Amino acid sequence: MLNELSPVNGSRTKRKRVGRGAGSHGKTSGKGHKGQGARSGKGVYRWFEGGQTPLKMRSPKRGFTNIFKKQFDIVNLKDLERFANGESVTVHTLADAGIISGKNPVKLLANGQVAIALSVSVNACSAAAARKIAEAGGKVEIV
Image (tube, rainbow, N blue to C red; front, side, top):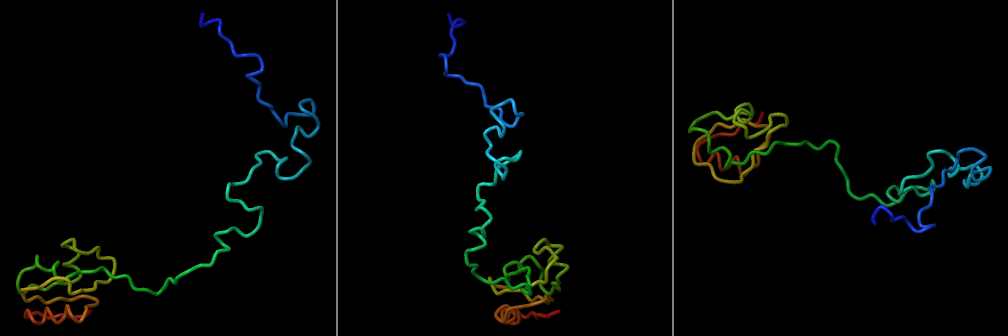
């Protein structure tokens, strides 16, 4: 029964193979005369706009990127709790402790409290962080 089923006549047609010589579908094989559409591998990407300046390039650009901006590794005061009283904290000790990557200069910020006297040596420091460390009996050195 199932082996006798077949599609209705005319419902299944063969694919039109264009560009296979003069004997198939005429001289230009349905591709018109010359131009991009007549070439092999024809077609343009979806966002192609016929050669005019694309929308992304036409639209106004906003903002500004400062190419001279310094990128700092940030260290907060709460990150310094793991060090012992009177210990010297440098960029190398911070990198060894895994607090910073060690690739960028280090900036110390005042997020958190410090209760021990530390000698901190970093590339930059906020005024509030330096004040909090000084109040705890430590000192900050900018290198």
